[in-house]
Image (cartoon, rainbow, N blue to C red; front, side):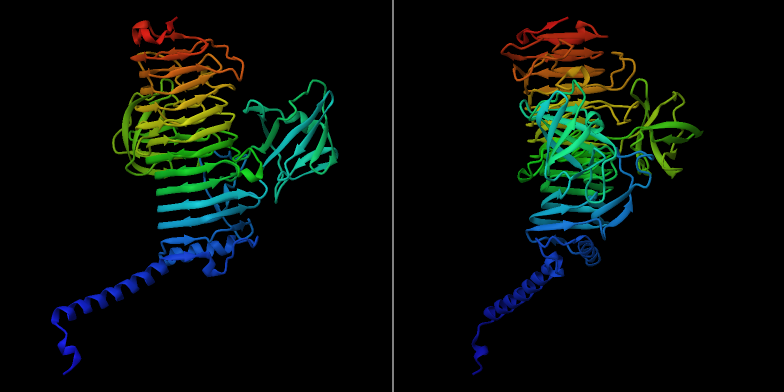
Amino acid sequence: MNYFTTIPMPFTVSLSRILLLIVIYCFTIAHADCQSVSVADFGIKPDSYENVTQRVQKIIEHIGKNNASKLVFPKGRYDFWPDGAIRAKYFVSNTSTEQENSLKVKTIGMLFKNMKNLTIDGNGSLFIFHGKMTTVLFDHCENVLFQNIHIDFERPTMSEMRYTNVTEGGVDLEIHPDAKYSIQDGQLVWHGEGWKTNHFHAVEFDTTVKTMRYADWKTLNKSKASEIRPGLVHFETPPGFKPVSGNILTVRDIIRDQVGMFILESKNVTLQDVGMHYMHGLGIVSQYTENITMRRVTCAPRPETKRIIASSADFMHFSGCRGQITVEDCKFSGAHDDPINVHGTNLRIAEKLESNKLKVRFMHGQSYGFNAFFVGDEVAFVHSASMQRFAKGKVKTVNRISDREIELAFEKSVPQNLEPNDCVENMTWTPEVLIKGSHFTRTNTRGILLTTPRKAIIENNTFYKTGMSAILIEADAEGWFESGPVRDVTIRNNEFIDCAYQGGPGNAIIAINPSNKAADIKTPVHFNIKIENNIFKTFDYPVLFAKSTKGLIFSNNSVLRTNDMKPQSTSKKMFDLNACSEVVISNVKLEGDVLGKNIKLNNMGKSDIKLDKNSNLVIE
């Protein structure tokens, strides 16, 4: 008898199914392996200090052609040099003027273009960049995860030095080992890998009170320099120049010719467990991108470098984005400008061409040339003088006339009541925003700039000694032309510690300051801003400055006096309100010798504010 004939039929079926499952499993494993690409498979080794730029770009192109879903870097150090890098023209918001950088060419370490469903995993690797480079660029990508990677520069374009000896007529500066320099004809010259600094901007860090303030490099730049020993330079300074010994001076070139990372017209992009330890020009710029998540992103120097600055401008810049922006559990320390800036761009109406057609123009010198409108976008027409959105429209066609000017045709006629300098604001490209669980410190400017008409929440964050307002809400059609009025903002459960020592509207910790020329209570700009359950630890008077806001709530907040710094504001008001209505201030807890305890009203009456008796505040 054949052995197999004795096997019962049910077992035969089971065995066949098992064999089939084994085949499917093996195929799946093989298929999964081909979807994951390691740079090691192409001969790239970590810790070689070799230039991997061109070879990594070839691998990225291979991934794109083969629809691989994962790019893996075995843990280690990888060096990226400009040699062999892709150079491509990109217009980036808030970067440089035509005079500063007419070519707009970016030197790109890793360019991901038109790629979907991709994870880039560094396994904790350190990517070191050289010269001036845009480290990573995502151009029209979708569903991208960039994780477990640390990015830094061998020689940052920021030069750092410490005052070690200060006397009448001379100072000694101990220069950080990463800050390369030479002395030519008695003048100190900052230089790096293929560049030198020509336009100077300086910020000084007070190592005692941990503050950042604008500083003077002109005096040192004009003073005779001599080297005492490598890394220690003496300057013969004029009488009266007496900086504080031990403070750290940081100097950079103001030209924003590159950016730290650029995310352009993409969708569903996540950075997770990423360290951006230095960025040149501007930080991580997300431009007209939908759905961005920054989770556990550290924008700060690596501790082992002993540097204090990690970006020559903003850390995270969101321009004209939509969908959901989430910044969660991030750390920000050492920016020469704002850690987070979320905004759109107002374009000024230059000419009415037809009943439904306008010529509009980019107005700020550093923001122009990019795609600001797309067919089908909903727009608002904005009176510049009052910052009022007074009419709506829908884009029918977009015609680029030049880098500065765009011709827009609308499905219906444009409003008849246009005024000089009115603007067009793109309402389609506006995001919801969540910023939570993050820490902001060591910046001489703001912590967060925020303008969006959609729901925004700022919660459970710590703002430690931001130079200007920790949170600034503007809406601007005069200066930076960063749109626009907010409609639903909640600021809750945050801690503010000794902020606004260097300025900001009213020197206030939170400032709401639209650019409307005339503040009229009948035409509010901002609506529905709730400031709840926060702790304000402050050395000075101002806590809140608000202008042209309807539906402003300040409730269940605590204000505590600190004494690390002396009061310096000329405005001796805790609350400074201008043309605001439906204001509620309730249950304000005052602890210690709090300054001010008062509310100043401008262009509004006491009937426009509801104040409970438990707050112990006085309306002036």
